[in-house]
Length: 191
Image 1 (cartoon, rainbow, N blue to C red):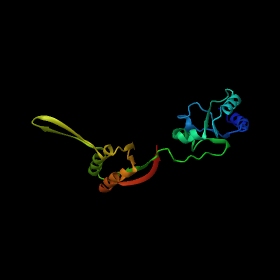
Image 2: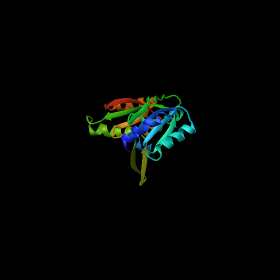
Image 3: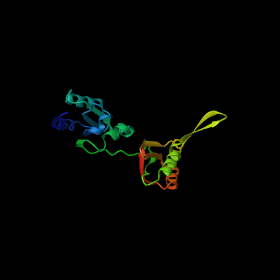
Image 4: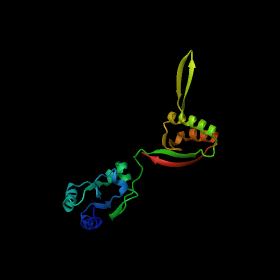
């Protein structure tokens, strides 16, 4: 997409009554906004305004036309546009968390490099569970036991990184403290 052409086209689009903003989405938006070159935000739904914008664009760009209400009810779409991209016209749109059912969570990063191997293994088993095998009456028995992560439905984001519901984070931090691991907590809101 030609940025200069997008800027020129925006001069005409912004003259249409009800157009609040014109946004040139960034690369981070590409997964959610597949093949979208411009996002036009309207104050209210109006088929005549939508068709006037389509006539101006006339196949030069792939556009997505939305209203403020749609932005408020579609957090994935809003998240795709924030932080990256260029505002070609209007004011930036602020979206509140009301009605989005956001969940308070904690990202826990922990470091076990200063721990001895025995304690590191014990911590790993406490967090992620393990398998024990033994023989009884000549028969091999395998017993799996869950760890804290599966019990509280935490998510492993990577090596030494967990995302936990805020009210369950104390179970993990207490375990890390017991094994004298170092950790950091990052509060986040997710949907």
